[in-house]
Image (cartoon, rainbow, N blue to C red):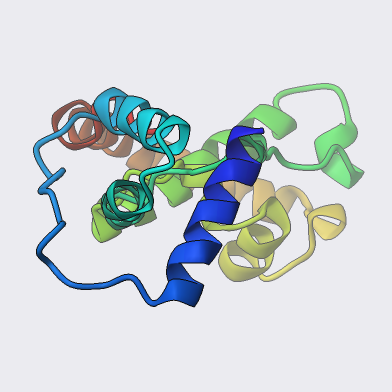
Length: 170
């Protein structure tokens, strides 16, 4: 219901051509939970101008508007080929995938969850040059080397970035 109301109000703003800075409130100092609460209040009050300002701030922080967007944050490697066999291959692939995506988020300085950056299939083709079902021991060795070289530093830097910049942003 919340998503439908936001969509309706946002569409109304676009159609009505709402603009101007006279009504704009600076939400840049608000925390993520404060922005979410303010968005809910603006929807309930049917205050389209306030909602637009809040949504623009949420967009600038790469925060999600709708719960369905969070499904991207739970993406994992498919259990196919070598990744489906017993052992540590799936965990190794998942760690490399997460580390690679976290590294990108650090470069971009965005709070959007790492897995929203790309699917595992895209990562596999970009980083390894093969589809997930075609990953062999050669590619697994590359993933292990990548994890050893990068995981701890990237996780530490990403955790610091999230704590300092994103607060409770999704």
